[in-house]
Length: 221
Image (tube, rainbow, N blue to C red; front, side, top):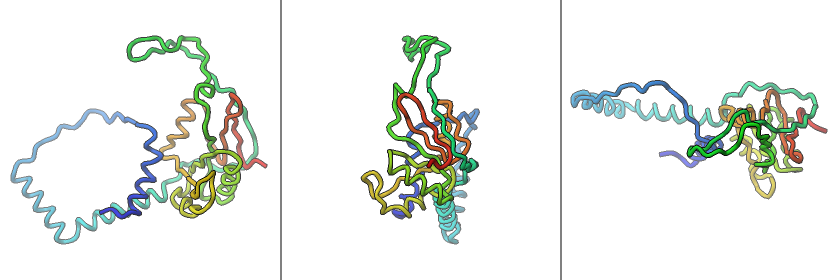
């Protein structure tokens, strides 16, 4: 049975991923075959034998350990650290190049329409991307997050270990600071797709300023 710690760790992995569904085209499905009775019995005998020798239990223990280790210490995303201080203020707007229709064929947006995403869906909270292995960046993110609503997103380091380390710190009315790891660059890729923003270095903070998107690179004074 899974321990409460294991369930917690698996929950940390599932939580940031559960905000969006993703599909992947894996090509043509392989044909499946029904095992005959003799083959099924032979397979059951093999499983029972491995249970008796302890191989099966050891397999699941190893699998569980590797899974927990991957959750606690995910591979870095390969984004460099750059402490050069600079700021950008972007006017986020797009011109539709073609008509957009719903599934019933009804016209939703005409070609040539100017779309301003931040007016349609303002940012409830800003984002700050950091390398969680760098204590300087961690402290900077915490200081900025106490000034304004921010989600701290790691591109490297352990969100689990940082949550444990700062589990008794006040954070916008909560006693735990919610660090996130950008699994498979889902947040970064969404920012690129929706706003044309590329996160190529950290630390970088994204906040809404009026109807514009403010990007603050490096550690702002």
